[in-house]
Structures are given as C-alpha cells and as structure tokens.
Amino acid sequence: MSSAAGAIRVLVVDDHAAVRSGLRMLLEQEGDLDVVGEAADGAAALLNARALRPDVVLMDLRMPGVSGVEATRAVVEQGLGRVLVLTTFDLDADVFGALGAGAAGFLLKTVDGASLRAAVRRVASGEGVLAPEVVRRVVARVAQVAQPSAADPPEAAGAVALDALTPRERDVLRCLGEGLSNAEVGAALVISEATAKTHVSRVLTKLNLRSRVQAAILARERGLV
Image (cartoon, rainbow, N blue to C red; front, top):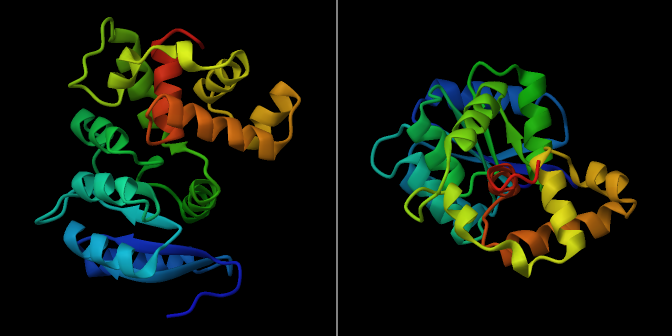
C-alpha cells in the first residue's frame, strides 16, 4: 500500500479488528495521515514495522503473545518507528512499562479523534504526548522517588549523572521537563527549532534515554523543573 506524498505513515496495532477499523477511519479523515498497515499482536507489529517502516506505531498494550510493552521496546531499540501507546488501561505497570520501553506518548482510548490525530502528528515530528491522567500519575510518582534504582525505568535515568551535559543542554533538558515542543524550546532559548531539535537528540543520547518523555521525567525527578 503506497502512502500519499508527505503523509505520515501509521501502523495500527490492536487485537480487536473492529477497533483497528475504527482507528483507521479516524486517522484517515484528514489526508496527512495514512494507515499503511495493521497488526493484531506484538509479534505481528514487529514484523509489519520491519516491512513497512511506519513513522508512528499506534500501539495497544494488552494483547495475546508478545505484549505491547515488549513490542514497544523492540520497535524503539531497532529504530522501526516512534511508538504512541493507545490503551484502555492506565495502571502504573502499563504507564511506566510503556514509557520505560521508550514510548513517545501514552493516550487512553477515551481520546477524541481530533486529539488523536494531533498526537500522531506530534509524535511523528519527534515530540512527546501524554494523556492528562498520565501526566498527573507521572508527576505524583516522580515526587515520591527519593533514590531511583536501575531496576525501575524510566526513573533509572535519574541515576545518570548530568555532568556530561553542557549548560545549554541542561537548559534544553529543563525545557523538556516543562513539556515544551521543539519550537517552544527554540523560542525559550532564542535558538532555531532545528537547533533545538539537535540539542534534544544530543541530550537523549548522552543520558541514554529512549524518548523525550523519559527526559521530562528525569528533569522533574532531578529537580530541574
């Protein structure tokens, strides 16, 4: 299946065919989003992601066989696309499992179509997206963390010293902790959006983080925000 020129390529992963069909209809209401494939479980998601190279994988979590969290980790580690989780569940194990695996966003299935399409666009552009309920959960948990352990991702990143960051990169990390987009980071630091994006990439690489969401959590946990 070929995508329209310039369209964001999306792989929809959910074990319910009716849900996948509904998501396809919602996403393709506007011409800049193109559902290039579907998968009913994590194993199929990996196969299709390798074959189709989507920009965004819209990932459910509770599926038979390979779970959404496992599939998310594999997709991110193999560079097969950015993952936006869309699930019914917002339990801690789901939220922090997915974010620890490198998901760029986490939404609940109660999200409306316009917000979902906007989230896919943001994730495709390298931004992070969290449902309001998830933001509150993340902030609450970060506030409770005193000494994060390596066994608890993504807070494990808190054990990483920030000394490797330049002063400008620390500023960028602080901006990420405030949930700013690349354009907003650029405006706040009086640099171009392209330069902001480069700094974000360097921050993630230096801190061995998989997503800007993890960076935001780290910034809050380390008291930068």
